[in-house]
Amino acid sequence: MLNDPRSHGLWEKTAPPAPETRPLQGDVTADVVIVGGGYTGLSAALHLAEEGTRVVLLEAKEIGFGGAGRNVGLINAGMWVMPDDLPGELGAVHGERLLDLLGNGPRVVMNLIDKHGIACELERNGTLHCAVGDAGLKEIEARAAQWQKRGAPVSLLSQEETARRVGTTAYRGALLDMRAGTLQPLAYARGLAHAAIRAGAVLHTSSPVVAQVETASGWTVKTDKGTVTASWLIVATDAYSEGPFAAVRNEQVHLPYFNFATVPLGDNIRRTILPGREGAWDTKEILSSFRMDQAGRLVFGSVGALRGAGTSIHRDWARRSLKKLFPEIADIPFETEWYGKIGMTDNALPRLHQFGRQAIGFSGYNGRGISPGTVFGKVLAEHILGRMPVEAMPLPSTDIATPSFRTAKEAWYETGAAVAHLAGARL
Ligand SMILES: Cc1cc2nc3c(=O)[nH]c(=O)nc-3n(C[C@H](O)[C@H](O)[C@H](O)COP(=O)(O)OP(=O)(O)OC[C@H]3O[C@@H](n4cnc5c(N)ncnc54)[C@H](O)[C@@H]3O)c2cc1C
Image (cartoon, rainbow, N blue to C red):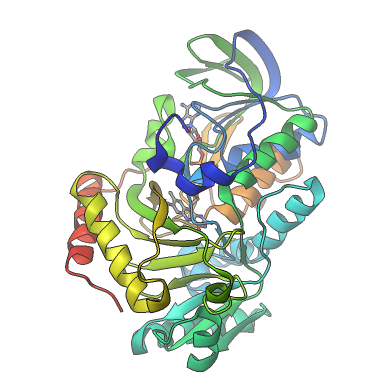
């Protein structure tokens, strides 16, 4: 994407083509203008267009340019916040709504993939949250108990069963969540774009929005080559926000996260490392994640940016860590490497913002945006179609707030991860 192999790595190499799209030219009208071509914007576009709404979506660069084309591809259920803590954070009403909505989020994603025949390497075999040490075990035990109380299909795996499923004895146990799964993230975004266009939405790429003006009946948004005038504006720019929506990005602290993908593993090794193709990550504070793609490449990631000295530090760390976890692939070459920015909020929960009359958006998914982006895009469509007032939404609408010491925190994340990986911190 944009000739940068470190931005979308493996996903760009293996995703089916994006639909053909052009920059916005001239002045057009619509019922709804959506800014941002990631999961949130594309899901809103698809769900609105399916109901006959005239939608124009403007993407600054390419479909899936932001987090949607760079992530690990873990289709998670729920957020990082413990289920029992959510009502305390958000109040009982919003907390229970959010738990219900996001607990069922992976099902919404998988149903959408089935309905629109999206070729995105979907695996429905669940995810494994792998426990490191006693503290990790305690964490997954508590998480499992809290989800089980709510009837979720999650279970705790013994050390032996975890070793059998992951292919390493490094973990004390794992939480298996059968609601979850994995996909090829850029392929999913492109598939949503194809489906939205088939439903009648108009998508323009290379069309950064540079200004928006509130009018008597709605909004006019401007790019350098045209305008869209519409009754409603959806802001779906999240961590990659630029131009007039920079405040959305400034509300978040960016956490860099990288991935290395190996060449495809041989059949024998595939029978020992993640033979069930669950997505996996561990309970460490500087966590690691690993998953297979359809061709049997192991995608291995952690916190850090692949730039400057970080590139070789994180690459060396990844090599050492893989060797410890899976000695049988100690010398396997990495085929691709890339990184992106995860938008973290101060309470690790997403945000709902209203940007004026009939202007609305969700953001801040804290590295768990595949299900929430898809589900919240649908919620935005329902809101605009008059079926879900703001009071019935899964989150309260809040003003944008900028966290203190944001820049310093971001520098700390990037440097701290490099220092930890340089020191070889692992398991
Ligand atoms: C490295 C990494 C790993 C992650 N791993 C996971 C994971 O395993 N599972 C998971 O669920 N989530 C994961 N996430 C998070 C997930 O990718 C995001 O939460 C998700 O992509 C957010 O979707 P979105 O549509 O809201 O925003 P994005 O996908 O970021 O899309 C926003 C789009 O808006 C566009 N834009 C910005 N400003 C303008 C403008 N002025 N005009 C026009 N367009 C504009 C951008 O170019 C971008 O394409 C990860 C993220 C990263 C970076």
